[in-house]
Amino acid sequence: MQRYHIYIFTLVLILGIPAVGADDVLEPPVPVRTVAPKYPADLEREGVTGVVSIDCVIDEKGNVTEAKVLKSSHPAFATPAVEALSKWKFKPAKRGGAVISIKITIPMQFNLSE
Image 1 (cartoon, rainbow, N blue to C red):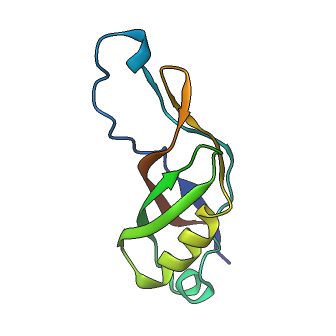
Image 2: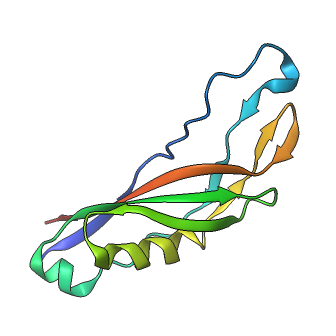
């Protein structure tokens, strides 16, 4: 019987280089609670692995909003990935010390291992 492990990749943040000056320094959001997505049973049985890339906004309270699948290697992975991500909690991003909302892309990988 195969066991699976779900690896959640590090957040992919394309933030650019901050402008000169302490007021423009960007602190990215940091996950403080993560939830692994449920592996679809039929894909687990068949040994199918994959990845889902999700665009979302982390709001000023550290909540995930506006989650949208950009790309999924298998359609059945998309819903569990978005459902799990909606339960994540972040330390919000800051710019110049002020809390801000920010758009990021989070990839989630579904892998099987023995």
